[in-house]
Amino acid sequence: MALHVTSPAASELKFPWPEPPPVGQPIEVAPGILWLRMALPFALDHVNLYLIEDRGGWAVFDTGISDEPSQAAWEQVLAGPLGGKPITKLIVSHFHPDHVGLAGWLDHRFDMPLYMSQAEYLMSRFLQMDHSEDVEHSNVDFYRRSGLGPAAIEQVLTRGHSYLKRTSGLRPNFIRLTAGDAIELGGRHWQVLTGGGHALEQVMLWCKADHIFLSADQVLARISPNVSVVPVEPEANPLGHYLASLAEIRDEVSDEVLVLPCHNLPFQGLHARIEQLEAHHLHRCDLIAAAAKAPISCAEVVPIIFRRPLEDPHQLSFALGEALAHLNYMLRIGALNVEVDTAGALRYRAV
Image 1 (tube, rainbow, N blue to C red):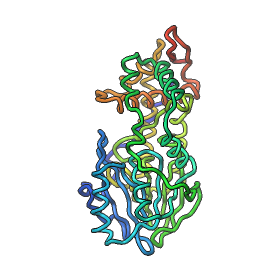
Image 2 (cartoon, rainbow, N blue to C red):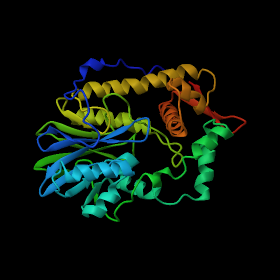
Image 3 (spheres, rainbow, N blue to C red):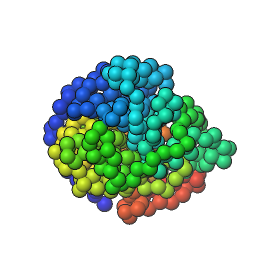
Image 4 (spheres, helix red, strand yellow):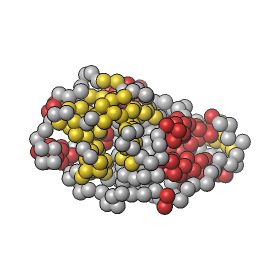
């Protein structure tokens, strides 16, 4: 079953700022909106945060990861570019550590309201709980069914409680954001959009009057966000949710917006980029369908859709989850069948 669609040329995107600001040194990208870049200790080595001048201080969209370099960068920003003014509101797009990591640390400083979607708040709280032996056993079974051998499973499991190390907690209450809500920040009225796939209910903000779209990780200019199945929900269909979210954004948000994403560069050309992302994932499905003429495991799909070397367990687990997201999507649309082999691994065959 061919799923591939033609991707628009990358030249259809425009980049008003060809280079990012230095880490920890924000620049203005619209009146009253600063773009702040923070470093990350991963292959994807940065995250973009946005600071919106608000009544009496600054509203912040996402926080960066919880580590000493990020805290030091925040101290400089608070004392310098923000003029010593407090943070008045914190909006967290989703539960991943590079977005929610310093929420607790900032809350201890400013005791400001926290705005999140319900699913993202609860998932972050859930992941900050200690993991039981039952969870560890379930994770082993998840990776075994994906076709990993014992050594590779042990490598992936060494990631352990990394979420706890990269986050600083959450306050015990929050203000819930849902799709269609409106929030005022800095004298602007922002519409809340939410989308699944990369996370459960990721929050994005659109200022229709000023043509500004805070896209979080849902629409990025140079890469696709990771769209993965995780052990807690092995039969999930995040790719289906992600493609549906892209279609909703295209229908809802005008094409002339300035897109302010949480990775890569701000850009213009939202609808063209959505088409590129759709084509990218459907092309991966075509590659899988061609390889699955004979039964194939999820682990065997990884090198088919990731041609670059996977250098550490962090990247391997992400790649495995993303491969499974494509397989689960193809099962849902009837492009694959699945069976269990003698080793207990799932094997997929093209219909």
